[in-house]
Image 1: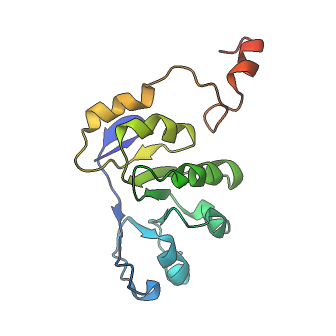
Image 2: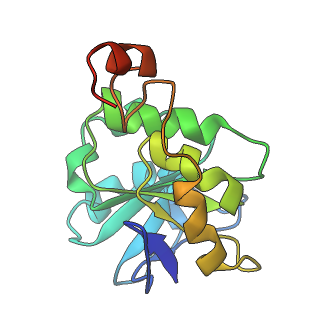
Length: 169
């Protein structure tokens, strides 16, 4: 189960997590809806691009610009949060949405907790695969922790002071 578009739904995708030592070109990608690591996508692109249902996930040190040529081929792109304190995934999500124009499902995977969801949604995430030990019903409430944001982001292009001047709160 995942949270997608502010609802708990069945997860129709499998996230492929091969051993780090395994060569990317040798990783076996099963049939069906599979989200592969970016290194596997890059090594097996010619084969994987032929498949209708392949997603890609980025590690926190991957460069989303490397997907620019293929970005609209993906139904889903996931960003991995290896640990709660690693915030690089927020920047990756923002770049995917704002600079690269990705319009598909943007999923947060890895060490994803309730307290992060509101901020993740602000930078463009619309689905979340929470850690297995977390309560999804409680996490849903995290998407509505605040009613107004001061800063501009993917979900609000103008900061509060500009919206208030125009009366667009």
